[in-house]
Length: 382
Image (cartoon, rainbow, N blue to C red; front, side):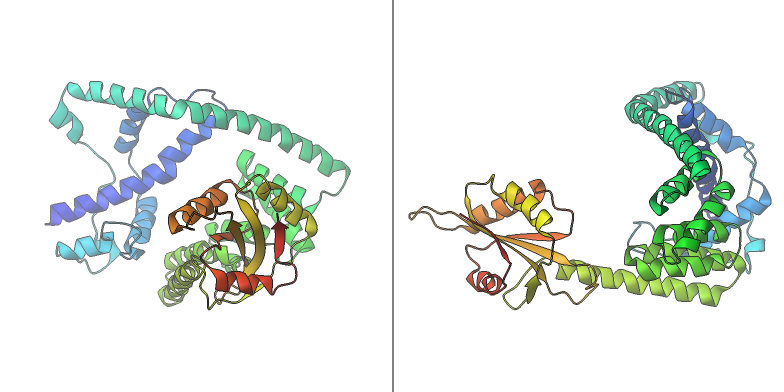
């Protein structure tokens, strides 16, 4: 059992090494190389044989042991698998991490065939990656040109906040996090509650083991609910590394509670009912005109309404409802299948920059009546 447990530990540590070091180094090559590496799995084999220093291995293990089993992965977490094997050391220091590999099991089992397998995987990976790699390489060259332009402009005049944020991202990509730090600080100085700048600034500081990063992450997630789970995870990992387990757990619980709210919000926004309430859309006429022009391409639509559903969860993020009435010949029944097909067609093809629910109202007269009571809901009437 001990051998099996220690093998699980070493696999976990090595997999984090691959993710954080090996693949990171590989994809850095996109910046300078037009074609992907030709011997990626041969390089991976050498990477596995490298010794990981004890400090790094301990950090990877600590993060792995802090994770809990959840629905995001079909496997139990490392901690639960070790417990199932009866391997429960008194402290992380008691866990034996074999940081170097002296015997290659692949060589032992596959012998001379190993070379053929490696060559096959090298070629397959290169073929699968080549197109996306070249596209990304081209994008990076274009980004480099933009980076130089923004640097030159910044020397002559103050950039807009959006330009400064773009410069911060590009500086992070092409130079370093440290070089991006003063740009992000300058943005936050101009707009204390800028979501992206606060989040990135907090991320950098937490990576440096600077507790002030928590304040910046908190500012970001206060303004952007979509950042709550990722932000809490960053703070949770930082506090775990600091040994502040109680406070770390509070952020874990906060993320889990927010996830439950997201599930409830998703359910609330996935349907409309006769009992729902609706409000005027409050969109500018320019946006309504764009939508109206698109809907006019569908001759089967006689009437279209645009409203907002009153939602309980995250009301600051409106859910628009686009309801249409489909033309029927007098001998045709307004079938649910035909209505669903039209609603799906609209949801897939209508360009609308906001979250929206599409519904055909032929069999929903009570909902249509609620729409008719709103002064600006009707946006198309043939």
